[in-house]
Length: 501
Image 1 (cartoon, rainbow, N blue to C red):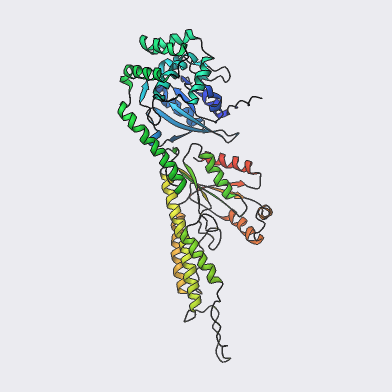
Image 2 (cartoon, rainbow, N blue to C red):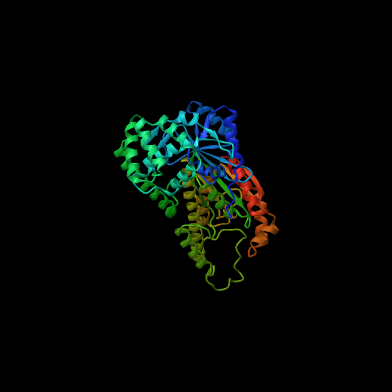
């Protein structure tokens, strides 16, 4: 049984229809063998447009909710732009490679311009299956042969190119191929290319090297970089790409995807225990990471991803909790007055001093770690990345729900109050580093308890109430019913996030 064909997304078809309506010449110019996959959001769409209508094209894209992104420098080429669109019905993304120029060449380099934009747009035809404009198959076959000569550089022909050749051979009339070969190539080069196509020697490495030599000389005026620079730049950029991926995997840093222009977004996902904030944040980041430089950061202080300093101090605090508050002493004489309620002792019991220092160090370490993560998040956002936080620090409710942990009171020790004051200052600074968007996940206490059966119902109820009460005056705040099935919650969150990019 053959596999079902991909279903085009509404947003992709609307784009082509809108360009039609605006009178902009355009077509999907290469790799039409997987046009359906591109329209379904499974792979990229290579959209060539009339460069003189670039402002109109951008206006069409923006009106449809597409967002402009910037690839890393090693994947950025002149006259080629990245736009991403969101399909509201399915929650899928569509990646449009918007071409104002035709480029080919080594991977990571694209050293050769092809002066055939007008010819491709003049020869466009309607794809019978989808109705969108594509390159005439005969012209696409000639261009594909030239692209293969520049891309393979004597290596074996990549499997995707083999499939494209076979797909196009089944759809062309060679009389049309001959016409287009002579229109875009010199007579001698056209004859050489036609001989390769007619004899199906498109994978002959020696023949491809010869075709590359011929076209390289004929199109010298359209060359972007020299041959030597291309030979050097390709391996260097490939190494940069590998290094970035390894760095991201090991440290979380390193740019691996496209970034939003001109600046990124910081998105906080909050909710009570059992609301699904960790799952939602991770799934949203995974969804975006198909093309976008997106990641998550844990801003809690529980058993999640916390640093070595916090883990070490937490172990010491747990060990201290097992010790008595103060050593037993002789009973107080009946004549000795009991201390007034709330009065400060003149001497702090030594074990209690240790406890106050230990808890102060731990709570301040947690605040320091949150602050460091938040500053990194802001830098990531400023560079165009999209960062999703699991939780977010707040100052409204100390002692709970990611607020300051050390309480301040006249009845507390001087040591404890000093630590509390420093911690409060850190949280006030964090409040200034507000997220762009806060997604509040709401669930009834019964649902939360069912999802977290080991948790205290009273504590969960309080966090449910605090989720409603928390305010983020510098952020856009959107409420989501998280008691529904996960796929429904995620689709809502994707719609919300994309709307606020």
